[in-house]
Length: 420
Length: 181
Ligand code: HEM
Ligand code: FES
Image (cartoon, rainbow over all chains, first blue to last red; front, side, top):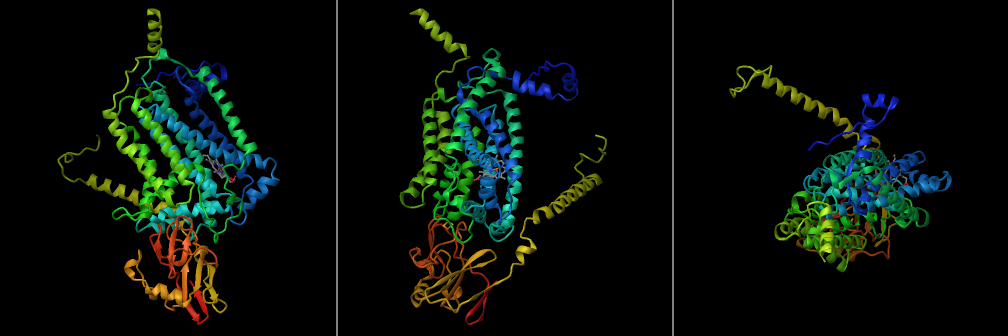
């Protein structure tokens, strides 16, 4: 399948440029002409919102760097003292950035579950999906390293616990951890390299988003019915979806603004208002909320599995919980995309959502008593969903009949009404 | 192809195969050598490695008391053990231990235990140094992060940590002065 490109309707200097460097034609085709299904619902707003959020993070981040000092003796004061109190609007820029990270993850998680519900990862969109999972992985690394920068006590201990995950690797684990730290504990060398990478990775994400959209526009958007649509069921991106995305942005900014202005510390652990202290581990180490389900999976493995010690087992399970998403296009064996026509899958989808919420709750609790058991059950179910239920369901479930195009259901009802 | 010689395709090894092999391996080795300084620059610098050793005066530490000192940026626990604590550690049969190590090896001078105060699970600092803090089910240390219990020899007894608390290199300069590092 080859996309058709339309030449951008420009004259004069712009035409002169476009002939030599077709950026205008390119933007025109991606953002104006792009034929989008006319039945997209509001769940299709989250991709463009995530893109806008990435831009906000980059802009606020670049300004923060102009005031921030990446050194263990000064980082905490440069954030909590200098940026928050002395820099003009520093508080606003920092709260936009810190809450922006939470908003970014919320948008991306909804975006991912949208993809799961409507089967957007299926043929021919496998690479599009894989690029998305890659974006998620790089986002996690970025947010983790950003969280270390203010050098509060939770920053310090989160960095310690997470980098120590690599010490579980047999034989070379300790060497790798020393290399990651640039020392024998998390310290100034660690802070400085995290700072460097925290600046770099968002631009890597930007490049991945670019490829993600390239892949999307090559094969076209999926839609709530999950069926392949013809030209007559599509409308140009502009003005139909540009205006709809702007409306969605307005609604989103209300939520974002609520947190920034009325609950700016809702997502910040109180411990992080104390400077890093290598001698004082906080009694409850908890990561940011968006990592909690994965943290719960890490802690669920409290027992040795054959020759794999518990510590390594937890690390493997945690990485596997993300890696399994890469395989999703092949684990789900059903040819039907949308859950609307998969009555049983639809129920399992919501059980998975519930399961991930349970994991998130458990991840925030101390690893004691029944919390551990619930965490283990929820972890087992998570893998069961992807590795057993999805492959079997595709073979066993009987999907509902699919419409052939968008007018069919409409004409169908009109027809029956006329007959009555 | 221009370089196809009559001997190629006959399965015979040609001089060109050899040249290609040499070129590719040179490129691979060259790339690795070129990358190494960047990778190794992330390892601990000379300044970090040069951090001096730490000396601890044992005189003021009462039996039952534990103090924390810093060595290479890490907390080191120095415990003046009571006879009961020594007895508990020495009486434990080795087959009850996840990481079997006799107390005699971990504390050659039984009343002094010197361990690195970093949980071998994921690196938190266990509690139990100050009196009144929880010391776990074996009266040693307790790691609150994911619930690891250490005994009075700093050996792992329960919880996710795989190994005993590590021992730093140390020597007794005099009976009341210990040098760590
Ligand atoms: C993918 C986009 C990004 C995400 C998810 C992200 C996430 C974060 C997070 C979670 C924090 C800790 C906030 C806090 O508790 O105060 C942070 C801090 C920081 N980030 Fe980012 N960030 C992103 C992009 C950037 C960019 C592009 C830059 C610079 C060019 C940047 C510069 C900084 C600085 C200087 C800090 C420390 C100041 C502070 O703590 O507020 N960030 N980031
Ligand atoms: S770090 Fe001590 S139990 Fe996990």
